[in-house]
Image (tube, rainbow, N blue to C red; front, side):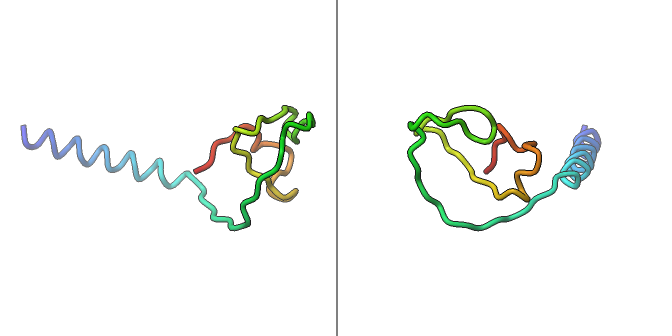
Length: 74
């Protein structure tokens, strides 16, 4: 039984190490600000946001063709 736990541990560790290597992480810094979204304008992703939404503004190099639309960041 002890051996099966070891196998499970090593297989799980291997899977986690393979998966975590495929994620690209970047750190960006900037200033936080607030703006009123109730003026009725659509954002770059084509939808109007509410003042309660958390929105991240990207520069044109990061925004690119819009592949970041509706993404979640931590």
